[in-house]
Image (cartoon, rainbow, N blue to C red):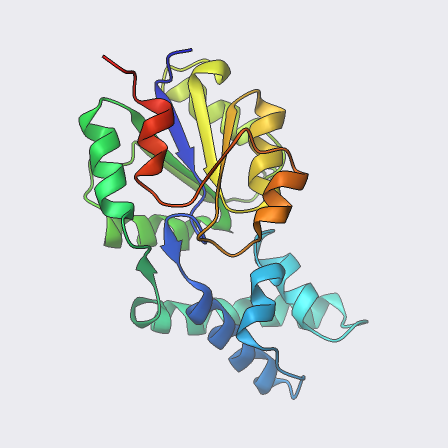
Length: 219
C-alpha cells in the first residue's frame, strides 16, 4: 500500500506539553483549595479533552458549574504560560520536514481545544508543513470517534487505507483503527508501550525518524 497522508496527534506525539499541562492544572486546583497531583499522574489524566481533564483532576462529586469554571480558568492561565513549558520532542522537526520532502500530506488531530492546537502548531512549525490542524470543537466528536480523521483524509485527497494515524495513546490507536488507517504508536510520549500493544497498534516506533522506514516507498 502506498501511503499519501499522515495524521498526527499533538500532545505526547509532536509536542512535549506535560510540564505546562500539569503545572497549569495544579494552579487551577490550588485556586479552589483542591488537592494537587504529581506531574507523572497527568500522563493518564490528559488526552480526552479539557472538560474530561478537569473532571479527572477535581475531587469526586465536583459539580458541573465548578468544572466549567475550572475549564475557563485553565484556558486563561494556559494562554499565558504555555510557551515557556512546551517544545517539540527531539527529532520531530526533522521528521516532519523529511515527510514533507517526500510529498506526504500532513495533518494534526487532537482533543486539545482547537484554539490552542492551532496556536501551538503555528508557533512550532513552518506554515506549509501541516495542511490541516483540528482540535476539539463544539459540535464535532472527539477521538476515538473516527469522523474527523476520515474528514481530514478526505480533504487531503486520501483514502483511509492510504492514510497513517500516529499517536502515543490508546485513544489515538483506536481512532486510526476505527477509521481504517494504518496505526503507528510512539513510545516517547505520555502513555506506555503496553497501552499501545493492548490497543493493537500496527507499528510501534521508538524515535521520530523511524517512521520514514515504514511509510516512504523503497526505490
